[in-house]
Image (tube, rainbow, N blue to C red; front, side, top):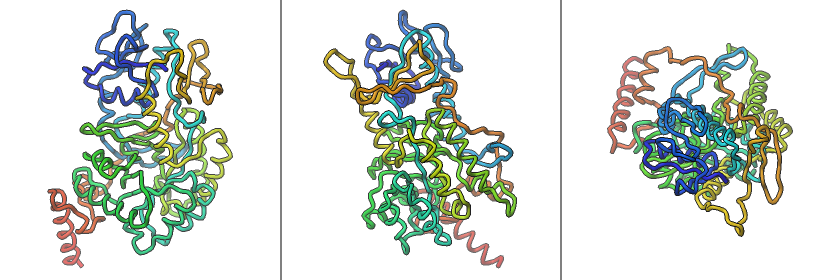
Length: 468
């Protein structure tokens, strides 16, 4: 493989290591053993990548955008318009452009090596040499009108490669859907107990997650993954995952349309598994009353799936029980995906997270190859004289496939501006997290935010009583 040295003195050292390991390059302990060095200033006789403004290459030296790379570690979720065909709808996603930054960083390293006649060798992104990976995820926010049962009917054939995250407060009195999904082969994950995530109140989030995991344990359902309500992140999430021995989280408010990456918070690493952030509900909310959008929504996902595959990105789609139950998307979409992508791995998100963790361990254990040690399996190679092709070495075989640096890791989303809730009260409640979803006994009163929310709830109820 292609070993990379990263100078520990760089301010962005943590994210540079995470991004390099995401790509699949091993980290070299020394400059001498490295093929490429990420350092503050260029070194004679070495291919180097140095901090700068923008991503570009000058001969043997490349530059990465220092400001943009630093922002990959930050969380900033905002509502933006997405343009798709003749329609525009709203998504709440990361606003730091992390997917574009990680893409630019990856392509810059690839081009630096190839333009200087060096092969690019890294661990491949999908198991067993597969071209890509496919998953269908359901965030079960509630069970209004018993909506989860018809979704399970439609997902029956796809359950072995589906991941369902349950908001458990809605299933205390009716839990058969969880057992049914699990017995059908689906992954069961946590979507917290109540459908709310604070950004400023770690203690209430901890209580919310603990209540959910207690529910799953009582049902003998093992949980390894969590998707936070509204795809939010918060300070302390790494600590919570470690405390409960959870393998990964999947929050598109942090990152979407990208490969999994290990983030570090206060010295604790945790794995983020991104998905495509458009749910059917995002499109349905933009429709006029009575408008039939079934064909548009199906065509949207078909187009996005083909673009994600061409970009070597996972095809990880999601919806909700309540926004999918009244449209004809399932099993139409899952059947189409299965027939359209026979060379992709169809798997659950916990299986992909396990593969990715094993892959990161391989990268950590890498040592320079000698004449007696075999090269690692499932590695990819791009040669300088054949840049339109990628070789995947798997089980003593070489799989050759077309390859395009221009399309690599490119998200199909196109944003066209920001969205603000029209009512000032709604914006105020969101800004200060004055929610009405959590009951009083769900709040952590060891935190100021818990007391603030309790005060809001009591005042809200009093005002409603007084105003009739």
